[in-house]
Amino acid sequence: VQLQASGGGTVQAGGSLRLSCTHASGFSLDQYAVGWFRRGPGPERKGVACITANDGSANGDKRYYLDSVKGRFTISRDNAKRMVYLEMNNLVPEDAADYYCQAIRGYSGGYCLTLTYDYWGPGTQVTVSS
Image 1 (cartoon, rainbow, N blue to C red):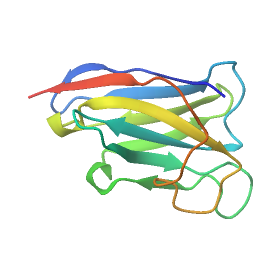
Image 2: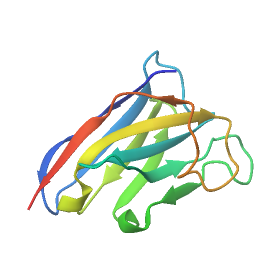
Image 3: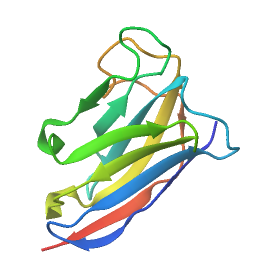
Image 4: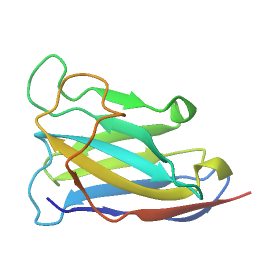
């Protein structure tokens, strides 16, 4: 499964961007847990937001966030459009990074920011100017 992330760009501090994640072949991601990750200048990858699989269970479609983005970022699905979004508001320079999405099929087991995901794709660059 190849994923495609898009929507990055350059904004001033305080601005907003919406990133999109889609399956390269157009399949729905609703049965997948999807995570957004970022990698800044260093090698460390950091989970930013994730949403568990939409499997109808009590833990389905639950959202988790990195502490530093809570209240500013929102992850969501649009199953009709087969997209997973990351809405980013009130951006700060520390948010600048390469953002990419990853997916794992059928996961609704709770916290998903530190999972080892099975599928991924190239990232989209976010630049925040101060």
